[in-house]
Image (cartoon, rainbow, N blue to C red):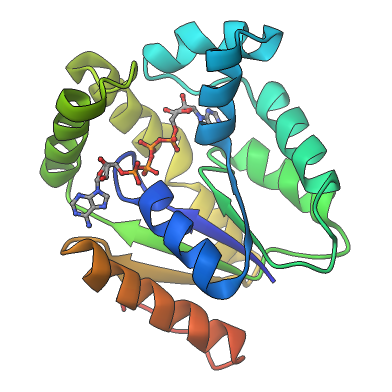
Length: 197
Ligand code: B4P
């Protein structure tokens, strides 16, 4: 199975994906983590991405598509994969369709969290971890990018008949995990589409 964990910045994609990965034995691929690691190592990709990420913008599609294609090629094609933070534009979604063919994305888990709560979470993380893109200006730009370029990715998948599961991402980490877990279990058991869990 190929699943996506989707949502605005700070909705808990990375937080939940790390837990789902272990529980369902999925290979977890986070484009945000890959980019931060490239930045930390000072690679050519990292140097190109660092300033863009710190400003809260999306790195260019062709760069991120190349990274994902290369990482996917290293994963056993029979394994279950959970993509986190990718695709973030319709162009990336189309590129992923081409990379996966003849396989398809099987499901999208979309975490829903109100914007004021997202901003609070990211500012809290800024105080604790000091991530370069958690400044107030960068957070506002990330929200803008999400609304303008990323939210429409859900329409791409709905249009292709992919199950999009919208999950309430507000609440204790374990409570949200339980909602995500139930949704994925239903999908893995081949039950009918679920919405608004
Ligand atoms: P990401 O790493 O994907 O950053 P994110 O959207 O902030 O992460 P996430 O939603 O996973 O939040 P998290 O679980 O950490 O991307 C970073 C940047 O990389 C992008 O802005 C972009 O520049 C670039 N990039 C990545 N992918 C790209 C692509 N495909 N194309 C172009 N550019 C790309 O949670 C956030 C905080 O909330 C944490 O502190 C966490 O502890 C807390 N939290 C989580 N769940 C909670 C809960 N239930 N209650 C309270 N707090 C919670």
